Image 1: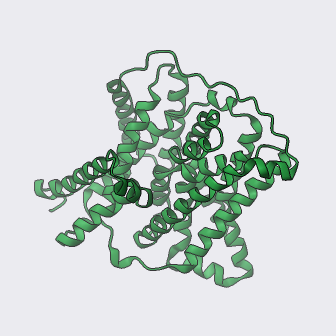
Image 2 (image 1 turned 90 degrees about the vertical axis):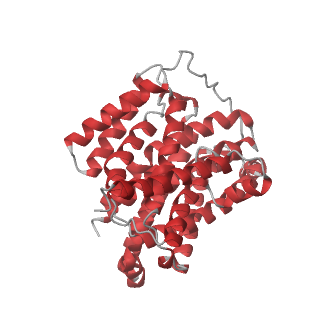
Image 3 (image 1 turned 120 degrees about the horizontal axis):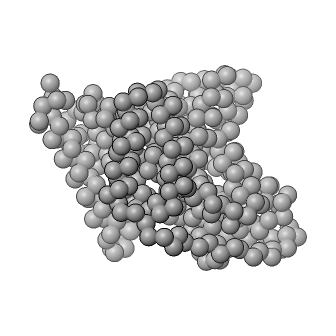
Length: 381
């Protein structure tokens, strides 16, 4: 059988390694055109597309390859474990409760919006028909993972709801375009936040607490890999349901990162980034471009969704009389992630950058849980 022969294993592995190496070379390039390309075609999307291009050109079919089972049963649980170990709960207190509420309100709206669509669908059947036809609602669940938790949460939720490949591809492309546009909008919003504060009568006097790094010497990367492999192996042998595995490993990772004093969180994030690329490349092996269609309804839903997220956080910030800059920071921590959140924040006040990073990491840690809650609520409809 192709899946178990040496050649059957070498081909997909070679494609995956080639994809990661290409992305790595492009990411370290100083060429302006390449940087512009990566702004609009980020590494995570490129990791999905490159294997698909190779497979389509070479007429290769890995749809039922054993590597997909390996990714779901081993790589995804391992990545969730190591991502969660990078989250520090102690640092959250430095952000302040008001900005934290603004941030959480944004996450809440993102998670609850698909449920509101189902409720609306009971009044307007056309909406419910669109959600169910082609299983569009499963794609919306993966958006929750993308916007709140990032790529790994999106991949976990894709597996949890068994999102069709054509729906997932549309989500990846349109979501990426919208997030890039949203980043530009948030850059402009945060620059004008002081004027908005003045018009709304918000008196901004913030004394941000200093965020101190860990002074202890972090453990070596080898020990981290050994511990993570050991826990993942035990998880594999126990053979719990997929969702149960994700919840348990998330909690274990969170405990390791917060109770193991010299745990190397930076190394954990670096490993996680490579693993996420690998998982996306494996998914790309069975991507078929002919399944991609221009879904106007999906684009409209994503735009309404993101606009509602912004209005929700804006309203909460106004009611709490908190600096409107936190609306942009919280939104980018949710939707943008650990790279764009501090970049947008630096446009307003560089002192807030560490706080933006903390919120982005919190988003990464909670995205899967928000998505699972959404799935649970949708089951009532």
